[in-house]
Amino acid sequence: MKYLVAILGVLVVFGLTYAASNNRHKIRYRPLFVMIALQVVLAFALLNTSVGEFLIRGFASIFESLLAYASEGINFVFGGIANDKTSPFFLNVLLPIVFISALIGILQYTKILPFIVKYIGLVLSKINGMGKLESYNAVASAILGQSEVFISVKKQIGLLPKHRLYTLCASAMSTVSMSIVGAYMQMIEPKFVVTALVLNLFGGFIISSILNPYVVTKEEDILEVQEEEKQSFFEMLGEYILDGFKVAIIVAAMLIGFVALIALINGIFDGIFGISFQSLLGYIFAPFAFVMGVPWSEAVEAGSIMATKMVSNEFVAMLDLAKHTTMSPRAVGIVSVFLVSFANFSSIGIIAGAVKGLHEKQGNVVARFGLKLLYGATLVSVLSATIAGLFL
Image (cartoon, rainbow, N blue to C red; front, side, top):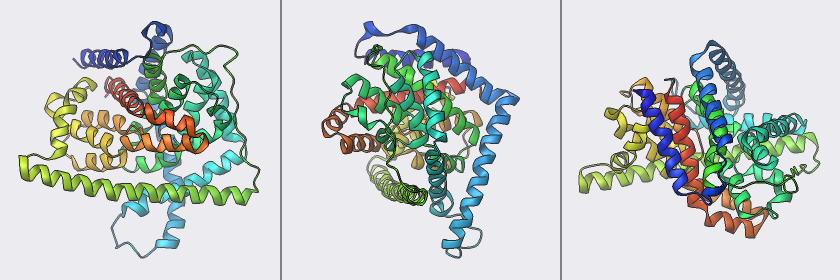
């Protein structure tokens, strides 16, 4: 039964994407089938094999060690603030972003990350049939973050036509940055975080290839990565540490605002209609949860969490998921994979603002197709969760 539901889920995603396609005649189906097959193989390997278990355990243990090191700095500054046996979200989940951001800066400064990202991007461009720039950007987004990635290709931003700019922005919204992966792993199981990271990479290409198909000519297929301004090692380190702290503060501020607003709206809806706003949204998203593989008896509950992610952000939704202790492991796994992306309304503003900061005209272009960006990125999450559901 779950295989039939998964096939239905993939067909629904393809149908919704095809219906909104810019140019259906230019869709190239061969790369799509190759990437879907790759998603299935990778999901099986990560979730159902000893090799996948070993890789996920290794990835998770690296982040566990990093978080332990991060806690040394956090305890030095904030030790004694928290009560015994308590686990403040800001201290334990968000502040480690500062340390991981510093490590990313070091890997960037030593040219290790640019080398890895560039050549993984070149390999991907052979698989997905897209340009080198698009493939580089998808990998770089997962490392650098959805706004920072545009700085690395700022030389080309102003020269890109609308359709190529859309693909770059779609990649940034469909993935998550490595600096906050450790935070996710403290909220949901690491295997679902890793699986989502891998599946979303290919899912972004699949959805963009249908929603926004085009062919990049050899003359256009140029990748110009902007070298960062030459800084001393400690200048760079200070910059990345401050950037990490800004991210932690921004996420904390958004959590305070969104959690409070959702509580207020739930209270108003409950008082007037006898049903919370999240429960109402749950009914709207329930069919999508079902085609992803969530049992129908839990579809409304899962749909509520999915909707929370889209109208607020993935952190709020992950906190909400933790409260649903009666959900089956299968439903939790599928919803967890869905939550690992930046597909929410606030990301439209973040991405448009990042591009506008580099090129005002192109930033306005991004703002105009913002809702289509969110539509595509949400379908990427649905596709990834559906494929993962085959093996849960």
